[in-house]
Amino acid sequence: MENRKKVIVTERVDEEGIKLLQQHLDVDVCLHINREELLERIHEYDAILVRSVTKVDEELLSLATKLKVVGRAGNGTDNIDIPAATKRGIIVANTPDSNTMSAGELAIGLLLAQCRNIPQANAYIKSGQWARNPFKGVELYNKTLGIIGLGRIGSLVATRMNAFGMKVIAYDPYISDERFKRFQVEKKDTLKELIEESDFITVHTPKTKETYGMIGEEEIEWMKDGVRIVNDARGGIVNERALLNGLKSGKIASAALDVHEEEPSFNNPLFELDNVIVTPHIGASTTEAQINVGTTVALQVINALKGEIVPNAVNLPTLHRDELAVLSPYIELMEKLGKIYYQLHNEPIEHIGIEYWGGIAKQDIEMCSIAFVKGILEPVLEDKVNYINAMILADQRGISIDQRTIKENYNGYLDYIEIKIKTKDKVFEIAGTLSSKKEGRLIKIQGYEVDVTPTNHMLIVQNKDVPGVIGYIGMALGEEGVNVATMQVGRNAKGDKAMMVLTIDDEVSKEGLKRLTQKENVLWAKCIKL
Image 1 (cartoon, one colour):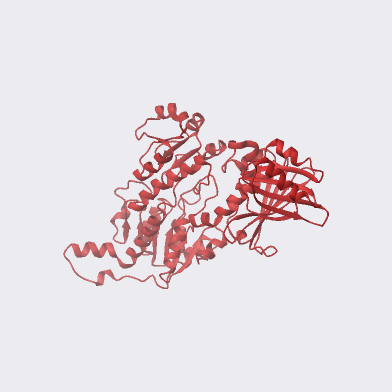
Image 2 (cartoon, rainbow, N blue to C red):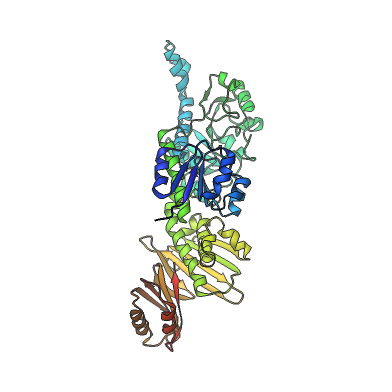
């Protein structure tokens, strides 16, 4: 019987998520478990799924000897000790994309509601009155929208407001220029620049020490007269006292808040103003968002326990779904290329240099480099290495890593990745690309040009470039009962050394490898398992 891995769910998630977990794992739903009991039982589980109440701290993690992943149903991770989890190689994954659409659409709704005084007009007519003049609004068309934070939600809002004919500008010092170009957003280098130019301002940044209170008295002084503000990100990013003063003075025409400095929020003086629209933190409160949160966190947990990519791991580079779709074939290829080295050589690595050329150089390549390092270490460390701790383990072994991007194409390749692994005395080179079908290809190894799709079992042979060797290898494998799927031969000069890369259906035995190398012109032969 299959020994299924176990997950404990300590807080409520959508039933669809629970059903998905149950298809792959043994699931204990313990919504009212107390702290003492959780500490006693956590050693039984490979995964834990929480929301915002359960504390996944150093104490719990030190007892969680089997734990591989913490799934957070939602966005914030204040209740999880991420550095402690990272040191233990435990993946922490949240679900930021799951409510992205809902939060983005709410921001746009709050923007429109301000422009056209929709809540006020609704209340007015329902009170038995009728008049148009009190509700004269403004158009979004040809106005400037300033977005603070061009992450998932900010970029979604940008895309949609471009369609409204707005000029969209943004401030986000942590986002690449490529992302600004991708979403047709004008980059502002300072917050002051953005504030001074904006007719409307919408906030989509996390709450950190840096962003808490980032819109205060001074920033409101920089604003245009009649500016309108939306905050459905986190309470406290816009200082509420400063906002109140700006609204009362007329500097700010209106504001819409879904998030508040204190929640639940009662008797807030902002609520008394007619030009303020408020909602009770409902950014993620849609049917679709709650189903998405449940199923997404379940998939994160399942993928992590299978050793697969976890797109929303917070202790890994974050990948948007669209970015993941582009990068997944590269990530898979890089991990396979990494696995080849230690199966060919046992020399300690001092340095890994990675060059990304062409189209791939325009992407966020951090995850590709991590995948390569994971692949490098996996044949040595097996299940002790994962995407979370690969870089830490490399550093502990004295392996330095650098990467650079070159946006030009390389020798006709639209995408090209070359890796140089430096040992004490040698440099090992390997390179790959994607085919037109987005299939990973090994195209160079140790200076020899080949063109092979890496498979689970491969045989790499170095031989003298003389007649008869290829036939001998094929015949020897046939005697072993090993079927050859493809064979590629690379050589640099006639009569010199050559290299064969074969994809095979089964592993060649140690005795079989020994027999292969008994041929005079076969220098060495090694089986690669990916």
